[in-house]
Image 1 (cartoon, helix red, strand yellow):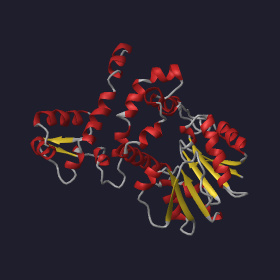
Image 2 (tube, rainbow, N blue to C red):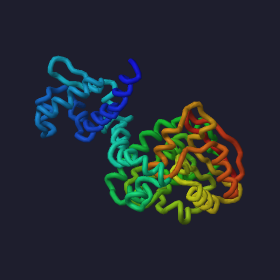
Image 3 (cartoon, rainbow, N blue to C red):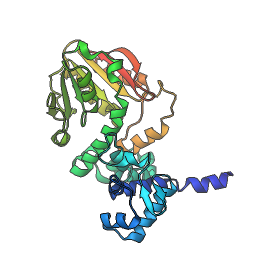
Image 4 (cartoon, rainbow, N blue to C red):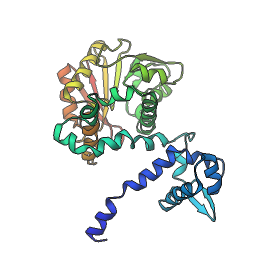
Length: 321
């Protein structure tokens, strides 16, 4: 393919994702969970005109997200993960990158010029203030993050011996993917999730994980001798990240531990520039090196102990008070 042909194809690559995203929005994949069906049967289930559903189905077949034999459409090894009830569902991850995220990227030029996020430029709010006003959006975002975190943190307890602690709190822990993994491996630990009230209200965890509501920009509960900040600091600029770290420092006892889990740019062989652009558009932030995270933590009074690779992206930075 020559350069001109490559570019003409490249400009419309988003069509593929948005075709799959549309199927998720319509709950089309769930219709096929029990059995393969014709376009007429699918259109009747969804109460959408057959001619339009048939066009969407053919689009999904063309990008290999559905199988078709004669006039029957069926899930395949990709689309099965986009059904809501699959134990490893990525449906909400798929939904996450359209809507507000897509609008933010479409206005990336404004964020580059102003240094402000799409949400500050358009609503005079940060992204999370915007999310917290809409319960459905907030729930979908948290479910999407849970899906990613479930994969990312599956080896967390193999990397860190949490048994040396009596209690541990996941600050900004969302729906509790990280803390649930730790609790499963170290059942004797007293475990907490701390997040904003709207998140905690919708958080459905096992009864022996305690839920605490509040903001990490205010006082953090003094209930644990270890705290996790997982993929939190990268959401905020240096001033806001410092506020969080100062409050975490105040919440920990002397010799308490802080575990920062982030994509450290100097610890991996993956270029995170596009992810940093995403953070700029959404949060006015960026992906940092381990040295930058260590400098922020040192400024708050923490002493750096060690860095351990969690997976091909994330690094665990351990600090003590």
